[in-house]
Length: 161
Image (cartoon, rainbow, N blue to C red):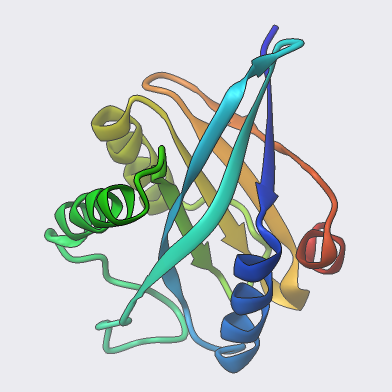
């Protein structure tokens, strides 16, 4: 059985903490860029090193975030830009989304979006940050959702339930 893990680079982790602290009562949405670090001992690690926030265009910013149709195309282009500029294996891994007033469980909209990402990318991760800064991460394949283990660092120690 394959296990999945999540880690952040130190620099991105610091930026992410500051960004989320700035918007404690607002639904936030970020595309996540990074690497999938090979399969070793049946463990696949998603290493997130960059993110691209999207403005919340919803009229009810505390309760919902509206992801535009162009979001995925913008993220794909951003991934290519980074890959070309750094000559690396970085790619779009998934998304981070906040639920400031509730637990970090997947809503039906989150599930649909996660499967849409998985269909586009082959597989995807979705990080949900909830009230009290709790965090869950989910792995989406084209037909299943699994929770991911976290590799503890500063952000993860602070945010994981």
